[in-house]
Image: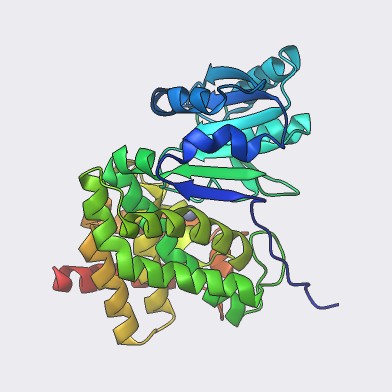
Length: 363
Ligand SMILES: [Zn+2]
């Protein structure tokens, strides 16, 4: 039987300036006793607004500051609180790790989960999976869930106040979405949710890319000055919803394997996920021998918002070490194998260096 087309998304997505003040109203159907798993900065930025949204209600709130990484130890600690406090709604407040912990706890305790992202740097808020680490910080596993979060609520004012580098990295992550999905469609490869790629998913991915081109630069400027503008609103939606739901249902290819590969290079440790995905997107276009107008359009975009177009900007100091990354990127099970005709470490290495030469020319 052919692979069945599949489309999954959060049950509810709410976004706008001051959205947090409506948090209780938008989620009260989920339960009445909430645990907020907060990153340090997430707590500082959101706690007051969240409490305000509960005024006059009989909903109970329990805030817990979270220990930094989504590890099994941290998940067990939160599950105990859920049981002791008779919690019936779990909420993740913060960046990727607080969100991943909340999703995991809700899944194990069979409870609904709501997400309040405080930066839009990754696809974590809208997807139906978590990245789990060991207590020592090394990668452990992915957990895939039967559903996406029950509610995602983004307060644009909070995103505008976060450092613009997070928004830029989120645009890099979003940049891969359309091109990776397009590559998967060409080879009939399954999505991240292991389904066939629907027309609807592809439409979200295309809109994601168009929105980046249209609003990326303006949104970055707005964020640098803590301003909420229509362009910033568009990019928040592109980074959070279009990119997250798009990648979940559209699949990954070279760009995300390049990211996984570069995690092997400690000199690139400070480079954010989305920055590496952006460079990986240019690399993927070279492997596809895409039209030069398309490659230029992507490079123009990267340069305009400050995403890397050379290996040096990614933190690479010794070009020969890129082979280590190329080998890791081509490990069995990597999404790079969704490409037509497959890709070997040699081919990837050459494309990564060719992208660097184009980038140097550009600069
Ligand atoms: Zn990503």
